[in-house]
Image (cartoon, rainbow over all chains, first blue to last red; front, side, top):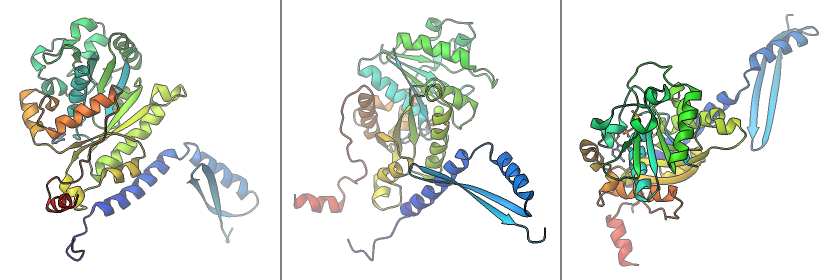
Length: 78
Length: 270
Ligand SMILES: Nc1ncnc2c1ncn2[C@@H]1O[C@H](COP(=O)(O)OP(=O)(O)OP(=O)(O)O)[C@@H](O)[C@H]1O
Ligand SMILES: [Mg+2]
C-alpha cells in the first residue's frame, strides 16, 4: 500500500537471469556440429591469400531470420 | 489407441512421481483406462506413492525380456479398477532399457489402455531419453525456481530432437505443470509467477499446483492426495486430470492470497 514500505522481491532478478541463461543454453545446443571443421577449412582458404590470426563464427537468430557472421582477424606480421 | 504421456522435469525432486500418481488416478476417476509406468529404473518410487509396494512381483524389465507376460506384471489399483501400475526394476544395469523392446511394450499398452503415463527419471541421460522416445506428449513439471526452470528447458530441447515423433516429422505435445506454488511469496515478488515462467519457457500451461503439506501425509499412507477433497493440491490434480481427458476446466487463480487484509478491503468495495 505504501510504496516506500514495499520490499522488492528477487523474482524479477530471477526472471532476468533465467531469460539470459536459457537464451545462451539454447544457442549452444543449436550450434552446428560441423562448426569447428568449417572454421578450419575457411582459415585454410583465406590463408592462401593473406595472413589470418583467427576466425570467429557466430550464429544470430532473430525471429525466423538466421544468419552466420564470419569475422576474419588478419595477422599483420604474416 | 492409447495416448502415451511422459512426465519429465530435467531437475530431480520437483514432483514427477507425485504428478504421475495423482493424474493417473485422476484419469481413472474420469472413467478412462489408465496405466502408470515407472521408468525410473533402479529407484522404484511410484509403487510406494500408490500404496502398491507389497503387490509387485514382476517389473518392466522382466516384461521386456520376456521373463513375464504383461498381464502378469500389471497391478490393478485397490483405489480404482480402471487404474493399473507397472513397476520399475531395481537393476543397476544401465543397458536394461533398449529401444526396440520399449517400443514393443508401449505398443501393447496402447492397445489395452486409453492413457499410458510414464514417470521419467531425473536428469537428461539415457533413462530420460528412453522415456520420451515413444511418447505422444510430455508433461513438464517445474517448481517456481531458477534451476528447475533452466533444466526443464534443456529437457524440452532433447524432447524436440530425440523423440520418435519428431524424427518422423510430427510434433510432441508439451504441457507445463507448475508445482509447489507459494501464493504469498508470488504476491510479495519473492517467487516467480506462472506468467513469468510461461514467458520464459514458451509452452502451454496445463495446471498449477500449490505447495501443500498434506502431500507428505498422502505419501506416508500410499494414498495420492487427489483422494483428499479438502486438499488444494488434490483439487488442482483433479482439474489437471479432467483437462487431460478433454474437459474444459477453468484455471483458478492460485497466486493471490485468500483472505489477506488487502483482499478483504477489496471485498468491501465489490
Ligand atoms: N505440491 C507439493 N507440495 C509439497 N510437497 C511436494 C509437492 N509436490 C511434491 N512434493 C514433495 O517433493 C518431494 C519430491 O517429489 P517427487 O518424488 O514426486 O519428485 P520427483 O520429481 O519424482 O523426484 P525424482 O526426480 O527423484 O524422481 C516429495 O517429498 C514430495 O512429497
Ligand atoms: Mg520420481
